Image (cartoon, rainbow, N blue to C red; front, side, top):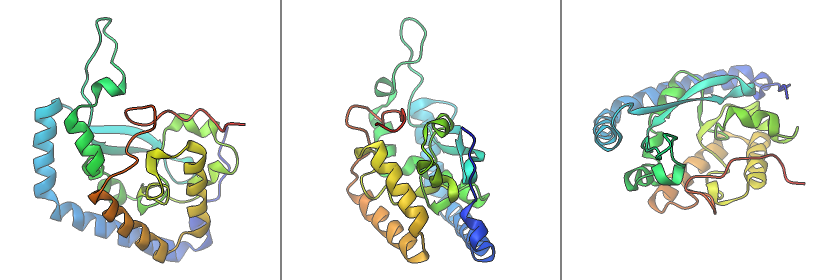
Length: 214
């Protein structure tokens, strides 16, 4: 299904362009300030998993445009006797679970904010293969830039159904504001102190989206 979206930026180009510049500058400052922590994490990931240190994957951004999202690697490359890579639950180590629960694996995404692919707040960038599975309402989540955190992340994260998660994403698109973004970032910080909804009910990470249930 081809996306026919009008980015929300078109509504207030100047205001949102300024926002993007501010976010890029803040993200760059954070990357510089967090260099010691990032270097420690690079060392720990290298010891735990080897190379590569970072996990790169193409994800849909604003208006569904593909971009390369970067995270710290959180799974090993364990393979079965047949040579095939094992399921996520068998490759996600205790250290990997820690990275995900603390959201430290997300720190490299600050670079995506610097270059303008992502915002601090917005719908999480999902898989490219999901684009053809969304209904028209769900596709509206791509009217804004994807975010490191978002409305769905502080309202259940992976512990809620796909339908509810996508509904919350579209709600954010219709109600996004500076005040809401500040609230989401504050709640995200509090959630990091007591992580919940890290994985799906029947999965080590999250079950794949297979389209809207009728």
